[in-house]
Amino acid sequence: MYSSSSSSSTNPQYLHDVFINFRGEDTRRTFVSHLYAVLSNSGINTFLDNEKLEKGEEIGHELLQAITVSHISIIVFSKSYAESSWCLNELDKIMECRRTQGQVVLPVFYDVDPSVVRHQKGEFGKALEVSAKSRSDRELVNKIVEAILPKLDNSTLPITEFPVGLESHVKQVVGLIEKQAGNFCIVGIWGMGGSGKTTVAKAVYNEIHRRFDCTSFIENIREVCEQDTRGHMHLQQQLLSDVLKTKEKIHSIALGTTRIQKVVSGKKALVVLDDVTDFQQIKVLCGNNKCFGSGSVLIVTTRDVHILKLLKVVSVYKMEEMHKNESLELFSWHAFRKASPKGGFSELSRSVAAYCGGLPLALEVLGSYLFDRTKQEWTSVLSKLERIPNDQVHEKLRISYDGL
Image 1 (tube, rainbow, N blue to C red):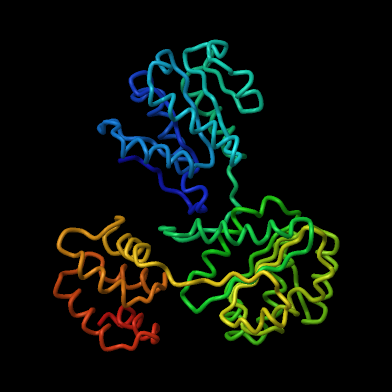
Image 2 (cartoon, rainbow, N blue to C red):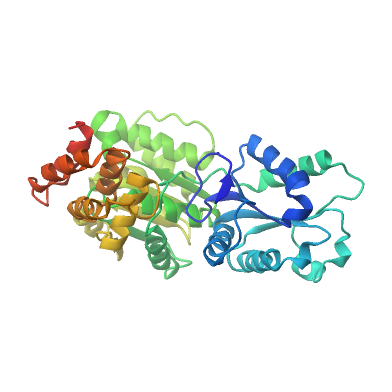
């Protein structure tokens, strides 16, 4: 239903870098077509609606949703723009997103004087503005791209392609953080392997990281420490490099901890420690928590709630299993590339999804494995799942890893 240029992954709040709001009959085949091509070639993920589809209620809802999950909205004002109720509906949504979530808005006045746009000074007074006056289309497009590139945040972390149910988790974790606003805050995200702890931590990081003086997301701590005897020092080097924006060399764990404490001392820092399996890993990377400045946030994800108790974490968010409907939707996105099972696969899909126990990792792995496979292959997978006890998640995943 829409065109979307490919680029690097975006966060759950921003599934698209840019949304283009325009009057199709004025500019689609000329200026907007050129703009979309240049944005795409610049690696900017751009949402553009498909002209072949009439805007029914469902499509209209999806267009408004696309605005909500876009980082920047470009509004192309043209001569007959105001005659389109859909353009105006989208404009209302864009301005709502600008007020409520800080969406960047770039008005482009194409073959129309800015003064004719009602409330232009009030609504767009602080927004970017580009006028087509005395410019060729090429010059105007280049000017727009130059204005957009610095506004795009390249420091966000890539997360899951299909963020089913993710928004609710993020809101709750951010809520725990905001309850302690102004103080040093430690939040634990606890749950079994494959429950989505890392994904939620990344999404929370993406949402709040702009509020801090320095940030660091240390991923896969368990794996790094198990595979390398110098794992602790490698992790220390990563944290220091993230904060200082330069490469750091650590010669001993003790010196690394001291260095970290000095670097973050008094600063408002956001540090995420992912997949912690030993309390010592936290001590090595953070030392004395008192070194963090006021308003700092430490997020720890772990399978072991005892670690959070040792750390005296008050705010613990437990990752529960996904509900049946969400499980089926996430499974369907991976198995069929849409939100629900395709015809003839509904019962099989429900059965396979049920055996995943509400774990996102299992739903993703098995769904991806069953993508474009025959019913006979599906039935074979289901029969193997039925022979595996519900608590043996890794054995269920092995079905897809071993390729049957």
